[in-house]
Length: 162
Image (cartoon, rainbow, N blue to C red; front, side):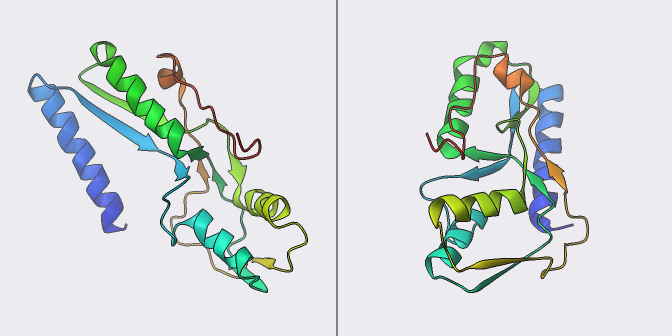
């Protein structure tokens, strides 16, 4: 397990402990795959867009069967604002999954991105050229019901580009 994941888990456990032992609130916001302006160039979507812009002939990928929930950064900000505005209703320890609640395979997402942003692109995605990591999460989609119950909803959809 990567140190980043271990650190996140331990921080969550510490938050849970303090929320139970002391009179404090702890909210764990579990973010799905965030995208939007200001994204680091090495993150998934900017990296793929860069490959397409450079007309890279072959973009090596895993099988692309992983299902991901892509959420626009503005929707994430609104999720945080919703929690802050409703903080009196939030239990001492709570976890919110922040995502659209809809998943798409990486393969379908990449093909859609290429067809919409770069129609006629000569780049070819070579699915299966990269081996999947051990312990790869194959399905990651938010269950955002408790967040929606507070009045939040995602306003952006990568397909609608709104």
